Figure 1 (cartoon, helix red, strand yellow):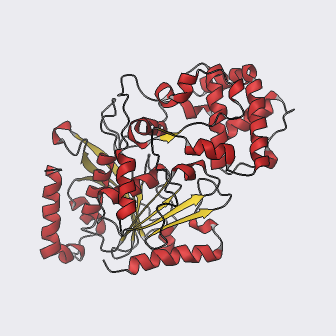
Figure 2: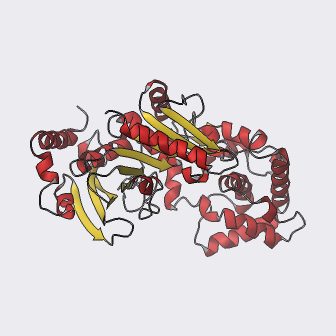
Figure 3: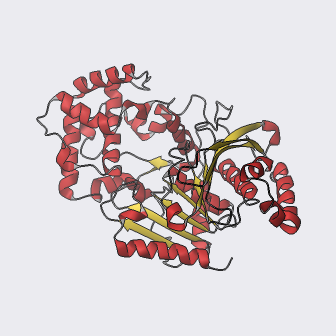
Length: 436
């Protein structure tokens, strides 16, 4: 049976639910003391209240491999920010380290909610002693979330919304597919759902769909100019990387190709300002600094914490293929590297050269058949929206997809017009008020 240690936790939870749950919640102990008493909690640190009445930095002891307890344990960072034990609970399912954990996610003030932020295993302070990354997968991620939520439900009586942006949103969608009864609503932003290791739909959108034809042509012309100045740009790139202590995975002359391609994606993701772009006659410094300000050499540093993501992308989550249309004739990097860039740029030597579609397939099957309640938010100019949860899943009933034209990767509900905002918030309220 899966998760032997979890069975023990579930038995405790069931007993508490039947006989002592209300007494436990209503006991005279402080919330901090109750947190400390939860199964698998190994430390609790109270922090200043900030936007919440109480805030705690909590570490949960988790199995390294939920299917194999003998593989050992690690300590996972969880931030618990409390307004009221009966309030709605907003669960932020991080895909990386806990970015702005202390900042209110936009759903929190909408509903006066508590906020729980779960850092992803292997990132930030949730380190795992596994240099081969054998256990950085969706199965274990979802099991981590399930154990945290199961424990916290012993203290928090309100309903649950899971949410996340980008890879964090994919963690929310996967979590609901793995454990459909753990949360009541899922709201995700800019969330990918790649069909294969290198999903070509984003590249097609970059070439044909995103922005206007004039904007795409202007962007391509600028990229070509940056590639024509390869020698000067590569020299500057090497200098910046060296000054930052970054070891580049390829010679700078070759890596510059990838940097320009990646900059194209970033320009749309982060709502590029076409008026601010230097002219094609600008100096080398102007062009280089403009690109670096948006997309620096840390993008290629395998030791940079967020770049561990690419290992999981290579194995099971997928990523996008780059769009080389309009610039391929100026590129010098070998086609074999372009076609398998994750392997050459990020994946450690010896990592298995296999890709599983199990994450996509399970989330896909779940969304096509579920009565779960989900809202998907996207920016119309975000390349990730073209490899995400598409229109084929949205039914306007329990699965609702909203796309803001012209917006990038960090679009929020607050960015929509007042009518659409009201519709989205109203939909969430109706989901939360529906019978369990």
